[in-house]
Amino acid sequence: MHSLQWKPTLMSFIRFRGARATTVLVGAIALTLGCGPNPSHVSVERAAITLDVLAAPAAAYFTLVDGSSSEDSVVAIRADMAQSVSMQVPQSHRVPGSQGSSTMLMVPVASVPIGRSGSVRFAPGGNTAILLDLKGPLVIGDSVRLTVILASGRSAITTAPVVTFEMLEQVLGGVGTSAPRAEAPSLSDGTALYRSNGCASCHGPLGFGDGPVGVTLDPPPRDFRDTLAFKTGRDVAQIARMLAVGMPSGGNMPLYPHLTNQERASLALHVISLRASSRPGSNTP
Image 1 (cartoon, rainbow, N blue to C red):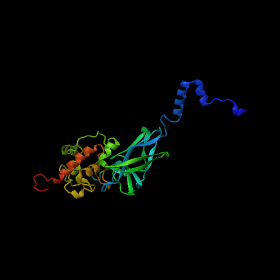
Image 2: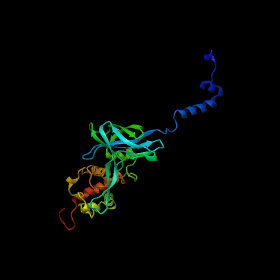
Image 3: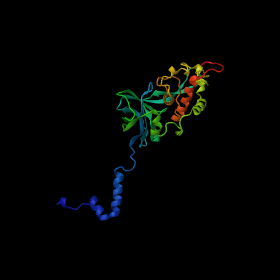
Image 4: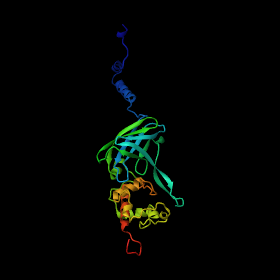
């Protein structure tokens, strides 16, 4: 009977060839089952969600890693705590009346390219996923399920913790281009950063909003003595966050993603110190 005829099988081949064949075959089977790199694999790493604070909406940040060699792009992001998610990127805009000066502002986009680099990063001051119409309040320590969808139809799912903005550098692996510093923010560092980053050109050396570029702008820059003018918050953490993500309502305020959060906090300390500024030769602010 044909059913009783001997046919070479995997197990009989292993018994016949011995231990060396067993090792070789097991290795080959492992490679076949995908222990090596998967060219179609896409994953989301180092994801986090920040709280919505005052006028600054909740946002998702992460790194997407694409194992394929073909170009692709992120076309949609879904979050189980939001009705919708808006992808935004920084773009250069000419400042009206400033004789060619430009600033970086966040604008919505339909897709974010990955290219052949194999990864794309969402971080403050760069690609950002804004969570719109939250289904409930976000609480530190909670988690949000994120789904990132690519133009090729592939997708990746992750669970992102809800963290404070100050914790982002630790979760994302460094938000700014310079390495995070361990020491606390300092007023002296903030004063130096205010000068080296051109803040005085708009806000003036004493923060009156009367810098050489600032006097040409509409709306004019903030006068730091007016605490009611700080629409996104007046304390150190809130000002530092605004320096990273910009003004949600627009305006001429540029982004400072090249600074670490510690540096932005130092800059915020200097801005707060200018609330008590007075004009030279004047006894009143």
